[in-house]
Length: 113
Image 1: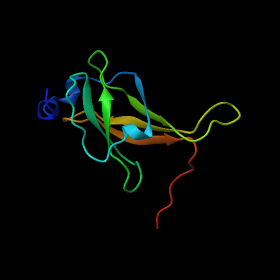
Image 2: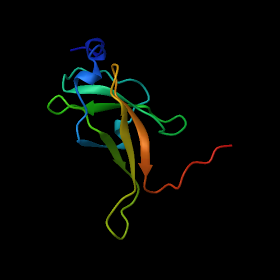
Image 3: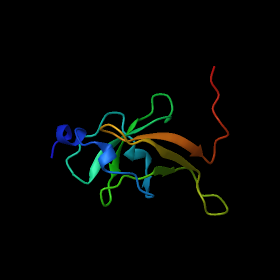
């Protein structure tokens, strides 16, 4: 299956599930990925920072896409936890699910000039 045929797949047909997909920094891509596996679709990630990647390969389980993406980063603290950034599914219409930043455990907000 080519990326062209995957792009035509309406995301709404997949449906969102309660599943959370854990990702790593290397999973975030600056260009749309070439997808050949029918159990995966291209997702868009918003608020990754200026110049940061904005695409990710989303795993589909039983015809459903994850409701959230979680990226753990940094060092483990005394409670054995790591900071995490969470993107929640904002839109499941069109050809690519859109995930928006919904939380970052180590950030109090953003400053802009």
